[in-house]
Image 1 (cartoon, rainbow, N blue to C red):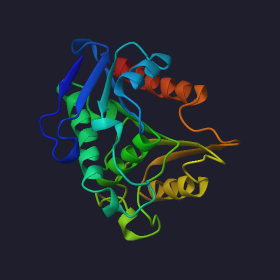
Image 2 (image 1 turned 180 degrees about the vertical axis):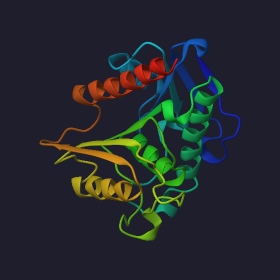
Image 3 (image 1 turned 60 degrees about the vertical axis):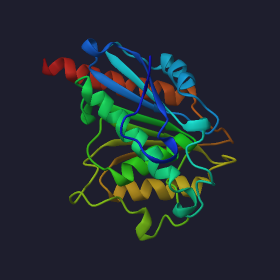
Image 4 (image 1 turned 90 degrees about the horizontal axis):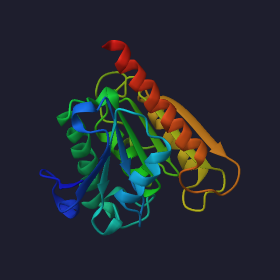
Length: 231
């Protein structure tokens, strides 16, 4: 099912949200899937078949012309505005869509791949709180200075991300995202209170691996189980 976003402005004002998985009445957990440059929300929904668990609503925003922002992820932030802010707003609107069907942020898992992973990172930096989990795959925080104030997570208490489980999966020789930037991103989020799991594998792989899909399924499954235990 496809629907437009009502409250997104800027370059992605015409973006749409594709949904699948559990119907609204049965949704216990939400999986937000953010595609990379050249990808599609439909492609992300197909990949989610590998990690789907019963009771999971699937929500995949789609970038206008399949590109979330125009410049490299390590360009100065201004080089990717206003597209980057508009992309972050799409993710925020997707989290709100999960809330509309009764799934709050603590039962919502965010997955971003490549350029979509950069967008998820920026969303977490700008809108920190406790989420059910996040997977940043073959990606890093946007910007040209991950040690400076522009990379700091927005203030929201002593530990803004409040223990959010955050997995960063990449490879040592990724052709697009240097491992050093992934490690620096991990450190930014550790300082912000996320429970960071950093995995940098040998080789030059880029994108979702079977191992990462399995880990996403495990995280979603644990949340579905937690919700069941509360009933």
